[in-house]
Image (cartoon, rainbow, N blue to C red; front, side, top):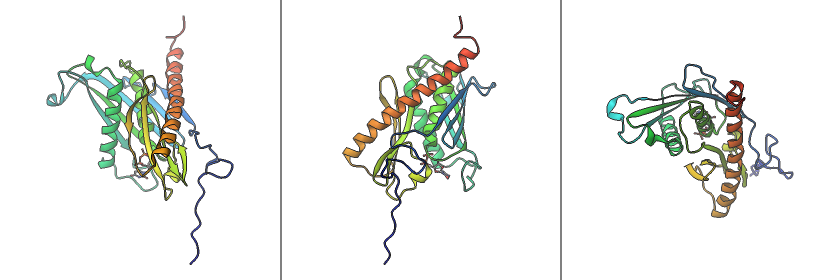
Length: 246
Ligand code: UDP
């Protein structure tokens, strides 16, 4: 029987399928304040991923029975456009979108001073218009910038990246081709960059403890790069409007 040829995800020179190094992120570009109707917004391009995030609130919590007298309720909506993936995505929100909305909302709640706004809700809507793996972290990254753009008091940003394994090698920020590797492990990771508190961590696959240690270190380092890009996007917006100018 002919032996199946194994795909190489990191070559002998340490290059990946798209030419990136093992710990290299895809190109990221963030623009803050792109939706005037929203209180805060951002547009993010992360490799092929394209994401809009819009934030409204804190505002009256409706329906009222969903309100909390102790904190603002984060209502995070992650949605994928029907045309964002090769096989048309059913526009009806599925279980995957509900799960991603839940974990991203929980992550942002760690960053926002929700206790300052009892009986209110903060609506965060993220629309994925093009997806190529890593879209939940792209959504969270854009949403975090949009919250800051809205002037919502936050103890920190939320910054993250995917990290994992393909072809037996630890790599940062897996794209779709890498996520589809036969031995792929995908770990979306998000942290509060100043305290390094982990606010989102999911695992799809199996890793040894040694591999995880390596992946976690690379993931935190890459997340710090994402944090710098987020800060730059916010500074660019507010300096444009003269806030930073004396
Ligand atoms: N995807 C798709 N159709 C779907 C859901 C996902 O083609 O209905 C693709 C899309 O490119 C997405 C990738 O699969 O980015 C990985 O999806 P996953 O659930 O792992 O979430 P993500 O990595 O985007 O956070």
